[in-house]
Amino acid sequence: RSNNLCVASLVQFRIVALLMMAFNAFGSFMVCLSVAAGLRNEVEVGGQHAEGLEADHRFEVVSRGTRQTSGSAWTVTEEDEAIIAKILTKLNVPGADSQFTWQDDHDHWTFGLVQLTAQSAKGSLVLHMLHRHGLASLLASRAASDEQFSSLVTAPESATWQLLQFYVDTAEKYAEIQELRQLLMSLSLSGLRNLHSFDHQWSVNNFAGKVHGCTQWMAGDCILQAGASKSAHDFLVSHGFGPKANEEVKTKFQQIMSRLNFGMTGLQPTTYSNFLTPGHTGEKNVTGMVITQNGSSFFLAGDVYWEDGGISRGLNIRIEQSTYDEIRAASFNDSLALKEARLQMYIEKQTYDHKYFMERQRLAIWTHETAEFSEMYPRYAKAKSKFPMLSGLLNRIRFGRRS
Image 1 (tube, rainbow, N blue to C red):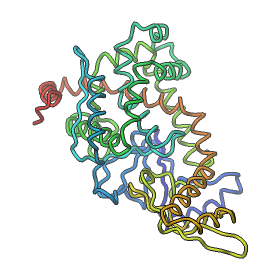
Image 2: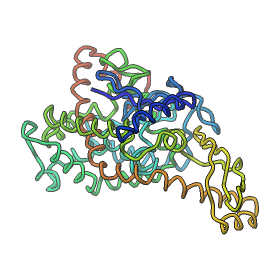
Image 3: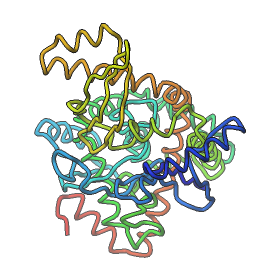
Image 4: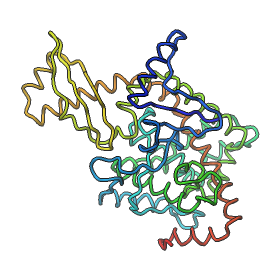
């Protein structure tokens, strides 16, 4: 069912270029070299998972040693810790049937679509936390009697993908969820990634070998913390998230991924590899970019190194005479700022068509994430029945006594 989204290495791209020439005769090109039923959605860079990518939530595997600044872990500031404390207070209300915990365990997980959705890297990861990690569903389930939600109660057998998208759109506008979204957005990107990483590593630590398909390197079937909430699951089911509509939602998502795989979103292979991998986030180091001249034309040329490990190689960005004059007249630091601003303009231009496409598919993407979260609790309940010790173990972890 899944597509294998393969973004090749520099050597592989030469092969892809030859293939493109053949496919251009049919009006399109291939970003992906294989679309195989029954395989996980995976992005491969250089034919291996060293960078840690998987499609959707399955674009994720643990990524170690890829950051250039602070080792392999996402760092957390004191301000981040204070904000996370507020987030935990909002999520962990008295009487809740699941607890959401966090500590800085120096884990390093990456959301593969972090740069590929219409949102910014941080905005994308926030929506991923709300929908795939279930934080929005936790809050919504506690407001089941609210008119916003009670009016959307739908039997799963009669629900459609359109109704589920309408639910997700409504949930995002709910005041409590908007407040949580703002708290998540106020984290640094690294702090947010640390929070995200803890939830994934927690799921692997507790469910690898207990839930079918849950492993350190293929964690899409593991149970995230909010996935242990029966009330969140039951709430989503009461709003139509059942086998029938969920399959429709997954089909819609796979159609989007197929368009992405085959270059039908306006995304060029070199644009992805230079600007939109999960490593192309954080601060940009543009000191390697120099001004070159070809006749009367001026260019910013060179490589750009990103804080989170990405590299934009071999850039050759045409600039106006006025930009050239401004950079030449500026101080060193100001010239770097001008180069970065011009680079950002170039990135936005190169990714505009793709981002526009993804914005139009926004609800389909995040409804798919919610549908996958809705299927988590039954796996948790099955694992708990097979491994009764899970209940006691999870209770110890929730209250800070990790074993």
